[in-house]
Every structure is written in C-alpha cells, then in structure tokens.
Image (tube, rainbow, N blue to C red; front, side, top):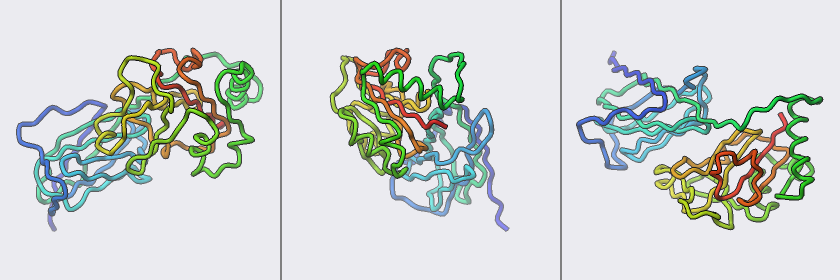
Length: 273
C-alpha cells in the first residue's frame, strides 16, 4: 500500500514565510498529486463550514464541508500557495510543497476577526430578542434612515431576503461577481479616502470597484468597509431576518460607527434569535 506523506499546518492568522523555490503559476495544469485536510476555529477547535480555499498557484477553488474537511485533487506536484478565508475569521495564506504522491493530512486553524460593538448592560424583559428589536424601534422613531420590519421580511424566502432589502431600500444595491453577492451603496463614498473595494482575492474573482457598505448582524460587525478588507458574501449570512435598517454616511448612528470607518453607509440586520 502506498504511504501518503503527512503534513500538519497549524495557522493563526499569520502568513507563512516566503520559501526559496518558485511557486507554481500555471493555471489549468493537472497532475497526480492531491491535498486533503481540515479547517477549524482556533479558539474552539470546531469545524469551519463553507470556508473558501484557493490554490492561487493553479487557480483552483474549493470549500470546506459540514465537517470542515476540504480536498484538492489532480494537482501538479511542486510549490503551491493556498489562500484560506471564512466569514468572521482572519484570512491566511500558506505556501506548501506538494509531492507527487500527495498530502493527506493538512490541519489548519483560523482566528476569529469579528469586531464587537460596544458592550452594554442589558436590563430588559422579553430576553435579548426584545432588547435588540426595541433598539430598532427607538431608532425608527427618530425618522432617520430606512427601516424594514417583520411585515416585510418575516415571510420572505430565505434565499431572497437580500434581493428584498435591495428592492425596498433606496440607495442599496447588490453587486454580483463569481457567484458571490455583496451590498454596496448607489450614492458613492462621502470621503476622499480610499474606497473599500475588497482584497486581492475579491479583485481576482471579478469584484468591481464599488462603495461597499458596512454590514452589522445582531450587533456584530461582519464587514467594516476598510480598505483591503475581504468583502462579505451575503450568501453566507444565515437568516431568517426580521428587521433591517440602512443609513447613509451622514445618518449613521454613533453606535454603528464608533471607528469612523463606514464611508459608504451602514446596513444593520436583525435575526431576533
């Protein structure tokens, strides 16, 4: 029985150092080699589901399954560069030498990269759902921003919620690229600084220059509109959503913009879970 070489790679958001030999660059090249492995959260060791893994050396992409496992097959042997990214985690890049008889045990971990908004003490009846939605109602009473509640989103097909948000909220649009979708503003940035446009991987996948809005889900920042920050694929967000609120740059409440880095506006979504 052929013995497969094992390789264990444990990463925590750091890029491995450059290696001396040349990384493969030809796309569409195949061979007998393969890379099998798994991806887990650094803190909890739980599997990361649906993460994107890209062999930039040969232009191949795959995703982790429900157990965090992934596989690349029919690869040329030699030096490969892999980019690993998942919503809510730091993106990493790793260089690896893949022998002709393959690598069957690549273990990787990602560190979380979720920026939590200011912590507050909660004293309210009805639980966290009531508290969050009470804040939504209080902001709506001010008459600033655009709001959708459960009468609009409550019965929406989970696959269509993003389209409904775009249709119902003026100034918001969905940008489609390579099967992904990201929210952007139709009004452009009210700022002279660099507009958020994704990272090198997003650009390689065809993400066009746009003013991508900050996205907050249940009080957690999922995309912060920072230059060079990986775009948020809204297909990865888990609903159903019962409320949404959108603000232009000038309207954004301080609680959603404490870092002052939302030059394209802010979309806040609430699941009520």
